Length: 248
Image 1 (cartoon, one colour):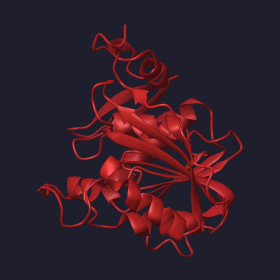
Image 2 (image 1 turned 135 degrees about the vertical axis):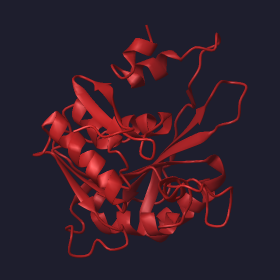
Image 3 (image 1 turned 30 degrees about the vertical axis):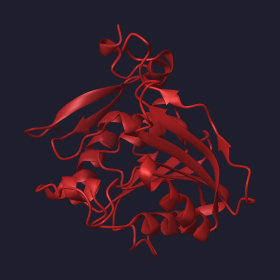
Image 4 (image 1 turned 90 degrees about the horizontal axis):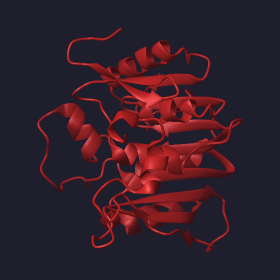
């Protein structure tokens, strides 16, 4: 079940995820999973699932009814498939090894209630390129662009279905333009800050397929730290049982 270099991380409520040096997850993944939490009867899809932390965190909350987890990297898909077996979630999470640009005939369009993606943060041709292929694909727009992701999400979503993603603040205009281009109306936006004195380092955004223009709600910023430098009460609540050993 576990191979050399891999280890298991507990996510809470008995759910565990297998991670490797090439396929792990960070705080942004946990925040996106919380921000995008589907309903219990929803049908959801994650584009670029990596180790599959988001569908596994969702399953910790006994939701949604089904998840299609898509990734272009065979190693990531194998990792998640073993995590699914470890948690006995075969009836809830389906792994799809595919390029998100090549989903025609592999999924049913316009049937998903929720589509989520933690995309590469760096636009093509920017930033220092990581020598490891898995890290390059995860951090840079090499296998797909933001527009590719939004276009695919629009095809997957039913009318009024929601699309959620996290990104760096400098990409906010890019994502809003792409969402509106493909008839996903931004409806909810939240910035994430380390502390009050720091500029936002991340944003979380939700759009609705076919939503009416305007009506974007900007929520209060999420502060990761309290005044003493420890985790804020909201961050502790979001983490829940995950990493509880670090929060006691």
